[in-house]
Picture 1 (cartoon, rainbow, N blue to C red):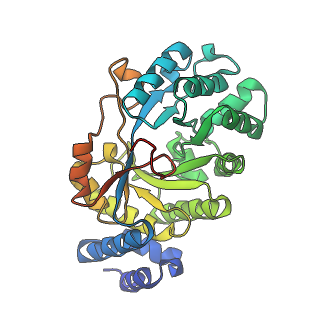
Picture 2 (spheres, rainbow, N blue to C red):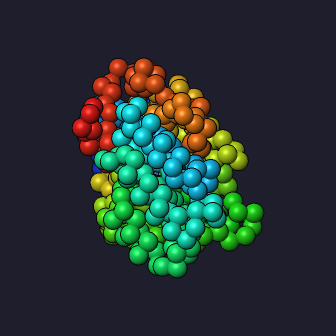
Picture 3 (cartoon, one colour):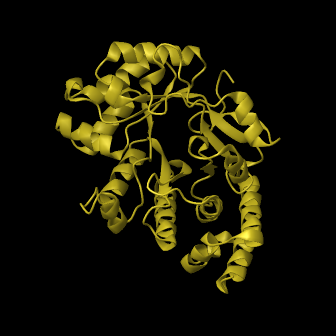
Length: 335
């Protein structure tokens, strides 16, 4: 056991805000009884911050690349989702060229017209940049126009790892969107009144120190803007992290994001059910979306065929209260 680990566990239990980066790195290596202690510490902090409820949002995912040029179809899919109880529609993926220079705004208006009151969670940072480029405007101008048209929040996905060297490695040695630009776009979204999620894709070429730096950067942005609603850790498609590493990362995220990001999600589509249940006992408080498919066009979403039923969600919650939420963690009008 690394010598730093007992001290790091003690600091985590007494005041996680005092954790140094080196101590956080040591916590990421916790295993066995130390991992159980780390998980229990993170879970106690979760209980203090969010209570015992396990939350979920009823949503539908749409693949913008697939449906973005057929707004009549988008309106049909949104209307169906609302009829099935969805309070959120999520759109990710660059729109096809046929959508035109105002395609992103046209899509926002289509969703708003088909689902009055539904929350549109759409357009990752690369798509925001694409939308601004197509219409020949600045990022701030596009985001303000999108919010006025009905956009409610933007996904923090596509962040990968917020380290330029890692991003270059993940991009085949070619420089990717710089971290500074990614942060600038998300900060601008918050400044115009949009909220966002935040993510980390872990288990690839990044080091534990780079994972800690990523979490520190997210915490700093969240404290600056107040715009990040939740954190989601997603396993790398290149090399799936071990359950041990996944549990440790979720627990450390709860500790390092305390006071900045209230909610830590256990991304049920990305993990085995037993691991999801463990994450909910180790600092996570949310399951994310049910991902409704509907009957009209089940393949319209990027995770089609992967729907969580309320009964399955209750089983994952392990006896804790299960509660439907809105995108911003409020109480749905129809819940």
